[in-house]
Image (tube, rainbow, N blue to C red; front, side, top):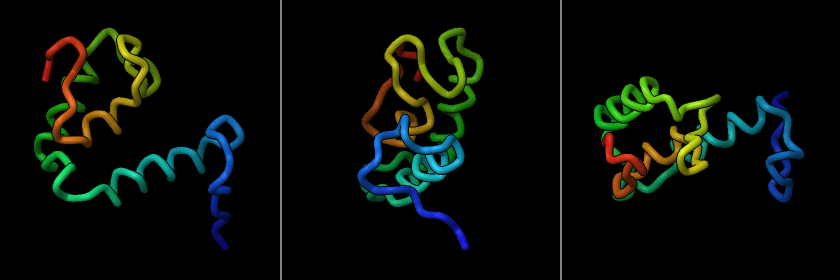
Length: 82
């Protein structure tokens, strides 16, 4: 039986696996009108993977989680790389 994360917990109170599942669930459930097309999403992540500001999924330039930032169509890279 899969353990569901507490909906009233802070991220620091969740284990890493539960946190990652929640992040990806948020991206999956995002409204299609707000969501980046899959091809563009992958291209954005590819650019981020080459960036010196990426560390453990976080952009050190702005503090965002790059997978979440890249998933939202209107978002931009703080350094205008995408």
